[in-house]
Length: 467
Image 1 (cartoon, rainbow, N blue to C red):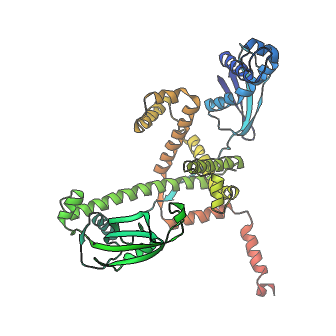
Image 2 (cartoon, rainbow, N blue to C red):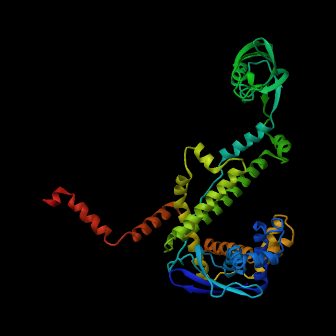
Image 3 (cartoon, helix red, strand yellow):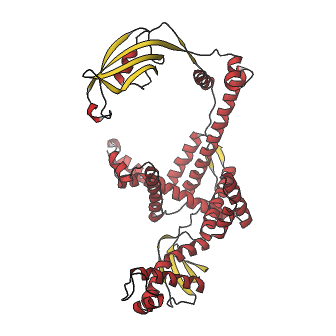
């Protein structure tokens, strides 16, 4: 396949595509095979007639139409990928000479492409980078969490409280008959943990070792067997032992046992350092997003509704796939939530428009700085990603040999490289400075004369000035 791209007016391009004779013959073979499945020829079983008979019965024109119909879209997708063209909407495809077996086939396609964003000549990127300090309270909470995980339980002469472990015997009946799955001896449960039915959980509170009581319970609707669902049951509950949680002492020995540190202070320092590193990574990620948002806000571009619609569709499809893995249909889920897909699409529209604007702005940034990724750099990147995912080495060759896959990865890497550069150039500012920049930008975007008209409106509404 060979392609040639011509830039047209109104954000359109024309791509001339030449399909080699081998691919054309392949298309005819597929067309004949597909047509043969549905054609009945007297004397032959359905789908078993020879190709020559099928060709003669249907005629060359029918075979030619099927070969073109079934392959033109695939050829177009390959052509746009190879040419690095991201078309918007459906192309206008045309050709001069009909497709013929044994000969190359040439066609052209005209398609709209994303508009070019215009960045300010004196572009200055600035964004807020969140600051997150780790205070002593956070460290103490983590220490207590680790301490609770290392707690033991000891028998005690005390009334049951939430969080205590209770050793019980429990026997449930309905109309005096034992419930098969409601008989337990030496059952260890945690009071207030929700493992038992609510009535039983509440009944344990304030009981002591040796206490016994009967508790009336309404069996749940999902009770098995179904004939017991919703029935009134009586549970005889006897407490055999109450165990209270004993927390380890906060000392150096605790640090050694639970985490392998020599001292408690070393454990606290490690918790603080780990949290600081996490906060720094989160701050870097947020700063990166903020820089991209600032770049998009400074770009002049009319975002095509078709690109926004495509981004919304991608979001909805991703949501549908995620729900589908849980066995839930998207429309069914939306009905359960009292909403509809169209309403969700409208909610997604502003964010998707902002994302498209930012991508177009980043494309303009790429062009301004001449950012490109050579094949050897691309191959190294793919190899690194494949190694990180423990994928076979042949994945690299497969991607590099497939024009569509190769150029998709190249574009992602180009945009990543561009954003890396933008982030490195960006200035860190305070939230107040960011708000002032946004207000100034909003004022600059206001229609000419808006301020003057506002003053005139204010004067007209002032009774003293009228007099």
